[in-house]
Length: 58
Ligand SMILES: [Zn+2]
Image 1 (cartoon, rainbow, N blue to C red):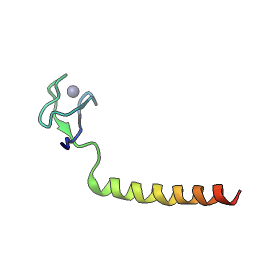
Image 2 (image 1 turned 90 degrees about the vertical axis):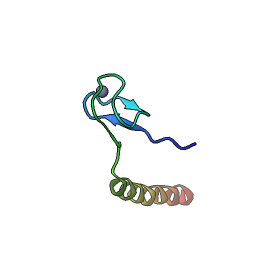
Image 3 (image 1 turned 30 degrees about the vertical axis):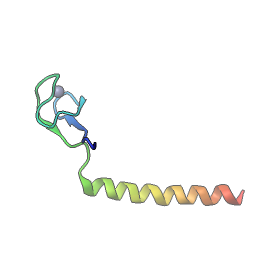
């Protein structure tokens, strides 16, 4: 049961509909390109690890 979430490129509404926006019938797109998401997550986990380390040292 995995559903992808899309959002409308026109009105920015989130939808599970992978073809057209239920609100304005505009084209829906995937919220994040995979590559961007991975890079962002990597950056975030480094930051989180740093915070965790600082928390332990205090
Ligand atoms: Zn729309």
